[in-house]
Length: 160
Image (tube, rainbow, N blue to C red; front, side, top):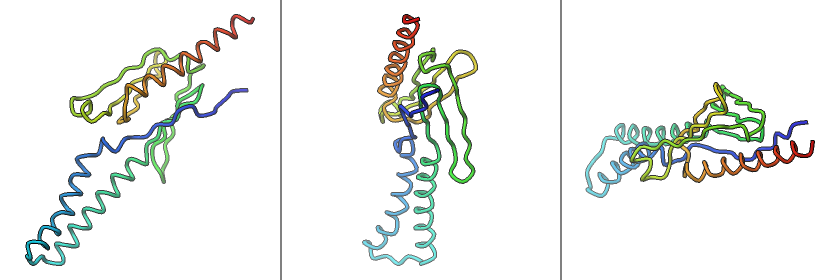
């Protein structure tokens, strides 16, 4: 019987959405600036500005909540969506059979501490874990899981 206990769950980081958060702050600062400058602002413009700010904030948080990566010892499950959910299972004999793990970061991503991890499990099982916080630490965790699994596989083979 297989052990499908989750060993690692990852989500997109908020750092990947900093431009959107900055736009929300600008949109919220707009009416505050007019209020303190004692300038009149049309109520339609005020409502549109506030509506755009909250819509953008909601969209960013919803977008972030829609993606999840779940590692177990035998597979990775990539889950996208909330209402219409897409699940992709990347199966491998055991996590110990993952062959390549790479991190990709732009200069901005490196300065903010997030990036994308590419994992390959031999051939067609390549996948990307996008916009994860501290990708080098996550890569080390995955490598640690691989190492532990390889040791347990080696131990089982030696017992036979």
